Image 1 (cartoon, rainbow, N blue to C red):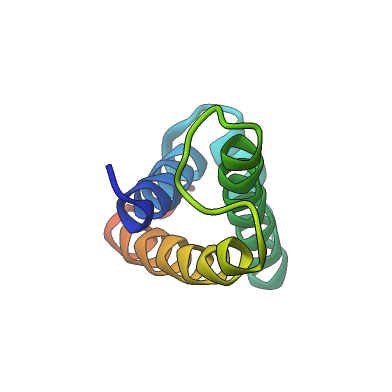
Image 2: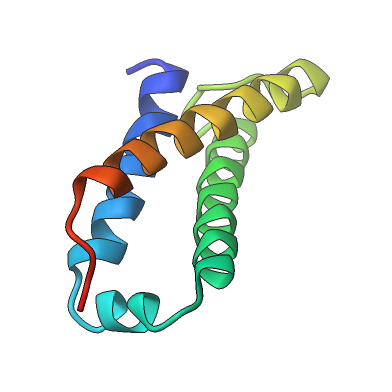
Length: 95
């Protein structure tokens, strides 16, 4: 699995979790649109930082543990956002 696929997969999983996981779905649906966006961006940022930390700790080797890796991480963050928002548009809103 390459970097962009992993980031996209993280974005999809997070979107589906916030749409279907009981308890989480209701709490997320109760938020205003601005807070929903902030929560999702924060969750995606945590996922990308996990990828970086796992790479630096040599648990997984997806990005380099240097400035080049941080630049790549920004691209991965954008890939995760795109996949997340595409999935969000396809899932039904929680009631």
